[in-house]
Length: 118
Image (cartoon, rainbow, N blue to C red):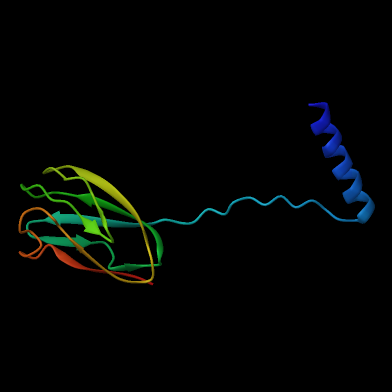
């Protein structure tokens, strides 16, 4: 412990003698875009169809009587039971990202689309 105190004091003295100041770097927090997804039979309704690239939090609700999920960019939510909700957080690169419901033939029936990360 004495050694740490001595090193810290020596660093402070060296900075003072050279006129330099110590700059503490703190990590910057990246913002997360929230997109609400309503999984109806047999269509998704998104609160927005595009967002800045980066971290996107999809909040999936299921008001329909069937179980659904939400898959995008190689990630898939857990199954969402009727009347329930879940979240899926993904980091999207710039570009077009197809999404779909992977339950049975739901995508073929219309539960699919494309989300754009700008």
